[in-house]
Amino acid sequence: MSPRKTTRSSPALNTPHLPEPRRQGRRKGLLPAVSVAVAACLAAAAVPASAAGPDPVVSRGVTIPAFYNPPTQLPAADGSLVRTEPLPLGVSLPGLDGRPMPGTATRLMYKSTDAGGGPVAVTGAYIEPSAAWKGGGARPLVALASGTMGQGDQCAPSLSLQHPLTIGEGTVSIGYDNIAVYRFLAAGAAVVVTDYAGLGTTDRLHTYVNRVDEGHALLDAARAARSVAGASVTSASKVGLYGYSQGGGASASAAELQSSYAPDVNLAGTYAGAPPADLTEVMKGIDGSALAGALGWSINGFVQSDPSLKAIVDAQTNDVGKAALKDTSTMCVGDSILGYGFTNSKKWTANGKPIADIIAAEPKLQAILAQQRIGTLKPTAPVRLATGVQDDIVGHKQARQLAVDWCRKGGDVTYEAVQLPNLGDKLLTNHLAPLLTDQGSAISWLTDRLSGKRTVSNCWSMPLQP
Image (tube, rainbow, N blue to C red; front, top):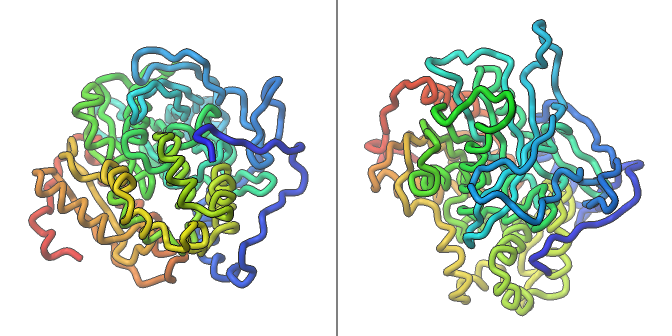
């Protein structure tokens, strides 16, 4: 496995082909999770394999537009725009005033700083809404961090705004967070979406669940939005952070880092849904689940951030594991579920032990995960943290602990335990259901903060809350 990005070149798209699941008998068990994700999709459009320059990057049959190739030199200031271009939204209607509904989108590339302190190009999208802001004051900005999309460049959230359903040769990606984007636009809030470091951009692998990379990318997206031609938001605009799952971890991290990294971002509130705050516990929940392929994304991302880890990974993985790490590095969620759903990590390790046991026996790996812990800093501005009590992928207990940690530091925390019945062990359904059932409340809470309405922390109730 290399810390550099790997891609798969293939002919132009014809009939989509999906990888066969590792065990045929598990197809039926995956249907509920896939059905929930499909239901969240706004529309469908296949990505054409059009040419993207003399040497296009092709990831699992999908040609990545040349826009996503970073230049060799980046601006000095974090949040500075590198380049922009119009972004056609996959779901859009002509408005009576001639402007598209729900807004005018711009594809972005901007400069950020990674966890190692180095410059990194990040892509994303800014959408100027057609609707007037319905709250008080000037139009605000929502910086949205998407939930898990995968590690292949074709999985980038900005691409999913253009193509809500991406199908390639062995890849399936659904833009399920597009619903939240459109709901904020309908309320008149501008939205900027980050692709995260290495997701979309072709120069490196996506550093999946790296809290610093994600937090910086989200905050710098808010900065970049101000410089987009035609944008109505300014440095004075109130900013809300929104994210669920991986996005919940990113928004939670950004809320912690804002005061030191981006004090110029006028943060009014943060929604962190199902945040993976303690990766040691989260990796245990992912192992053997429908989303087991995310273990590969995590390991690949750690090696991207710290190449010295490659020797440990090589020593601890067998040939099957090495092949899985390479394979998952270009996968989106759909193909990961079909290809590695319910895989136990002990099949990937040299000693036949699960990854959790290997981490427990390796001090350097323990230290890496400890550095990723969210909850060691007090968040800026009010935070609403929601977690499903039945969530067995991004565990409820560790998410609740984040609320406790923030409360102990004096944070203004609104904790919401989403109580639903058990919808199937390790199928993703217990994780996805709160995303849908709590979304309306989450968006209302955040728009209230952007309107200047006050909130009252319910930290006092934590001993009584599940």
